[in-house]
Length: 282
Image (cartoon, rainbow, N blue to C red; front, side, top):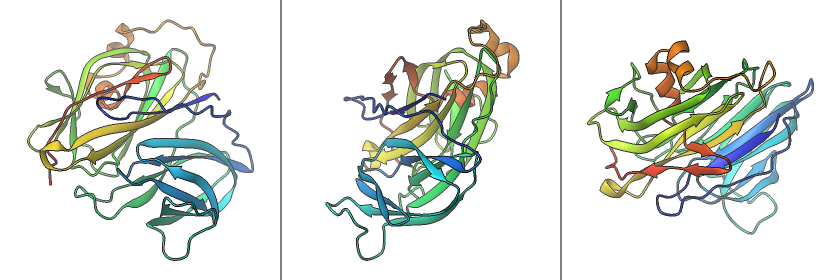
């Protein structure tokens, strides 16, 4: 499977972090591991079982996949330094995870609550199962220091229950195509947090979306998303027509936009995000 790793960054200087990731190498003895840095304003060094694995890992970015043998792994996050060996003392964030063979995982470093306190490392299992031709999937993970959110298209709320911090939602298969005018609002008060506009769901792809932020405080607080995609997940030859009409025919509107609304619009190798300022809800 060919992978693209992309990160949504700042409102004025949008950038794409492109990593030429190798094909997934999961096997009867190995697992894939992606890492997402969703703690704002904290460049870090990541040590896995005592070895420096990610040096000067920047907030709002993703890395991977790491091809790792099955087993138990101690992941430790330290403030960025020039050290190449594990520093003395306690890490800023740490957790131990067991990786099973033939599996794909993401470990996310993220704030632990809506006030940005108690940063944590959480492991998620990535759905890399086959997808019918002409369809795709969306995996949404709430990993921002923010309260629950609502997902909308235009002014219409589409998710029945707000998505809470630490929740994950896998949607699909959905017919590939364009979904228009999506946005995310804070559940209490309705303040708009993210404006995404039109988004594109490519066929044969699972898009993993991680809410990120806030950057800044109070009325200046803003939110982003960190995403990566795993594609070439077709269970049949590509090229089956899909298009916009298929979206409404296969899934009700609430499920469609709940996944798509947190996606960044993908156009080739570019990520386009329009963020709006929102007051942080405490």
